[in-house]
Length: 476
Image 1 (tube, rainbow, N blue to C red):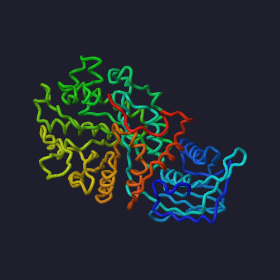
Image 2 (image 1 turned 120 degrees about the horizontal axis):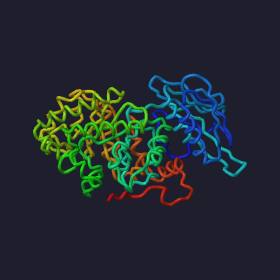
Image 3 (image 1 turned 60 degrees about the horizontal axis):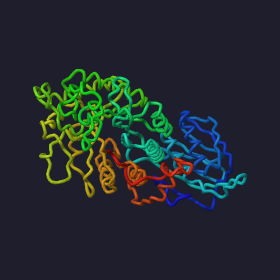
Image 4 (image 1 turned 90 degrees about the horizontal axis):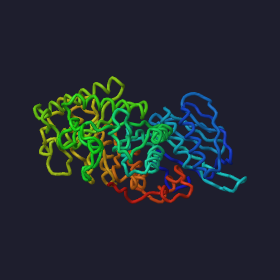
């Protein structure tokens, strides 16, 4: 192989450098089971990992999910989602699904080694190898925020990395940056993007075989701005929409039918933009001003909350989607002992809503403080009958701990969050991918090798600003 490691490392990898499959500037290959978008991504990956010096031509041939050229034939073991076989006479990838086939090809291209890159003399080899592989965690998502200060090239790079490193889902959260037709005041006049500006993000994700999960905050974070800086995307534009929110503007007013109608229209637009899928993220965290307006405070808070969320669940189910919600409103800090517990359910007793909630809801348990052991909150949700995904942030030890939790508890999956640290996630993405893919992951990490993968996936033609990564993303 070319680098010291494959990213993420396969379950079984055996390489024999004494035998090599040799090729040049043109390679013809067969494939079966790939969509047109994924087939184009395969050709792009082949070209980029051969340093733009070899072109792949694909011919649809065969049955099932396969790719290759020559006489090699990959075979699947019972536990495999894909396998790779390389001999002097050919290369082959076999898989059980399109996603598995894409994952196998992502591994295969990392084996390409250059011999000569001069024009007209292009020569490469892949050493004889056999690979058998499958993920330890089935649902592997990355949550990406698009802030007014975000650079779209950073978002694109993150999606490229997530796709190549075998994530299954991208969650897009827009902070006043998506231009809704239902209410223009939901986006900043000078810091938002048109759908044509953003459509490339969806296309990139789809081409890697990932699903885009749309997200609209339906409870707290209604301002679509960080509270630290005091902005409100809607009310700074038009205060006549004040009744859609609780008095401080931070939380949506759940008693107002106009709120429900607007959120329904926002979901419809966001779903159409993101395309087909099985999930919708509703947010639901940090609603510190819930039930403070003159209408909501007349209701029993946890009952109002449960009714609203269950109604949203029915709405989404009719469209073939399941809701995902952050966990913090549904547990009490006082119910746990010492430890870095994230919980807000003591306020207004919103934790009491948990027993009233529809079990089709997926709980996203964001536990950023655990670094040296198992967190105690996920088991609570699982025992109550909820599919639960666990969410670390950017501390490597936190990622390790949470990934171990998912495997130990057989939780539904994992969501890697990036928030305002997205540029630094680019640097750490290879490490996180290793933790979520493997049953017994290594702790190896090389920012230099991460940089190689990033620039291979996202060529910048020498532009400084869009190359590599920055140490932070400043939010005003």
